[in-house]
Image (cartoon, rainbow, N blue to C red; front, side, top):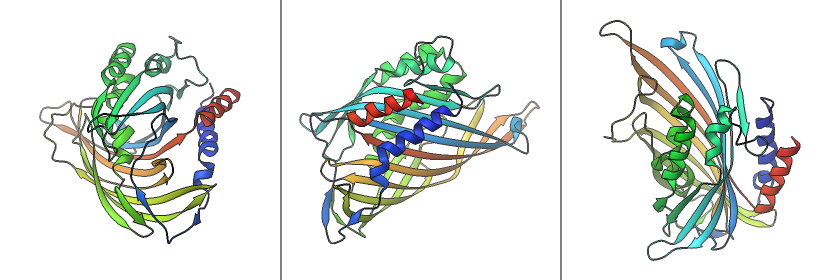
Length: 339
């Protein structure tokens, strides 16, 4: 597969899936709506999570001029909604339907996309590591506010990838996203935390918080400032557009952290801005885009006695969440195959 094919496919997919969502809305700023999760039991959609990541590191073995690396991670899950019991409002079944990744390596760029590449190809390191994710199901029991109260199936996903990747350097890149705390954040809290769970109108604001977990550094406390930008119709669908800003700082995290490639990592500062679109009829955020920047400091033991090496790293991430229908997902597959 050509190195740029994955990005071409992703661009076409997002344009096809989100074209309606990014068009200007016919605003009715006098309206007010309840902005809360209302997932419809029996409904099946596909949730696509895509991250475009640029990492710049300077110092230590990266040298004074520094090194820039780029990577892309795309994960799609088929989501089925079922009624919950007791304190559980809904059960969300998320079955991994697609995995794709582009990464720069010392030798050459590497890419894999399960929509077009063979996930059972044991000669392709990315296929070997990513392929086992396909078909694995995560169960989220969520409360009336849309927040996860119990999760199941994550261990099966984690151990399948760990065994296939044989604990190599590629697994180090994937391990964090496979932990329960990260999956809860990535697939739920990163957008569910934005629901104010009340009636809103244009101009209304509120604050929210979420913890962005890590196994390599202290967890990050994210504090959101949210604002309703517009309420209206887009393509015949009533939607609410919300923008937000995120301030970040290290949380009061006492959990011991692993050293990443021999380095201890801490957060200097971080920030993010984003937008979400809420489908009033379906009762959920169907689109999210977020630009995030983290500045980190890493400390590693140097060769000499009592010496240390400092590495500064800046990570810029463009994150997109898109919820598409079964028909749209089918069209994506066809587009990928033709690409």
